[in-house]
Picture 1: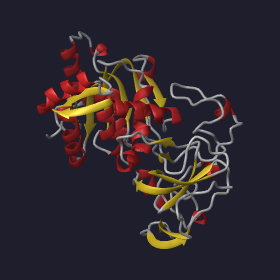
Picture 2: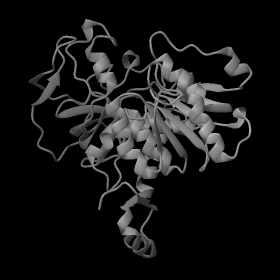
Picture 3: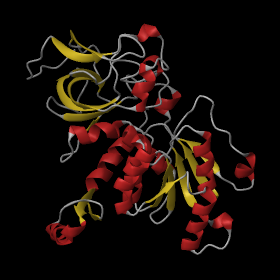
Picture 4: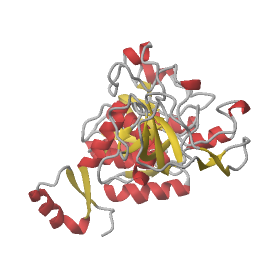
Length: 373
């Protein structure tokens, strides 16, 4: 089933295995996986990122004990070492980025044949296919990237752009792709306002950076001291406003925006859209409180008890609430293109930026005011 590899592959490898829920991983020797599907590739894992979902799975909330032993991680990157017989888009030696969803889609269901939405893939593949194994992807429904080698579906991955490392790419495969797709669903134009609840978390701090470089006016909100510190570290120098929800009310923040924008009525004041990343009702309510009338609330988190939505906000304030899980493969490629076309320079290096511009350096050249020389 596999193409010939010029790599001298071992028969076994090391893997971090979850043998029981709520216990540490066990590092042990396991057999090297073999390619059994024509769409699959074997990759050498070069970087594997830890996500909140890994913690949820390890606590036993995502599956029965029958799934154990299990190798986690659904956001990783690596180098192709062997190929299935139908893989034509990649070659041995290529570097690829791996998101968890979309492993062995059926290609025939309504989701696969009729993808819809801003970031929909071409017909025949959908990361939302309900027939993927166990309803979950690599790292959740099947073994993931906390091992030296991993099997992946060639249809779910993307090539890593030149100039980006595996370590940079790995955390983008869930956190980055999720928040990037959520920002896209806001349908905002440069100069409009966006709020990010939970701005200092894994998704949030990436969202702040993406949103600023999209040309949006960013207000990040958090409550945890460490999260606020991280958000200020990455966002303040870029021009984002970081708000401590413990000391500033949503209404006061909204009115300050209105004063800056020259708005005369509270209904006109506030962000045009807000992302809800935390799982608390307080965060949801604060986020809704930041949105102008007619704005959008994009819900990314999914607490078991759900969120309470006030009918008055939907009816009288005309606020729209939409959900967003993870981006499609198209969104992943767009995210990489977006990352590639933004080249940052420290404040002191404006002349270097200008020189590169005249040399024809590709991409958007940006002074990052918080970047150290």
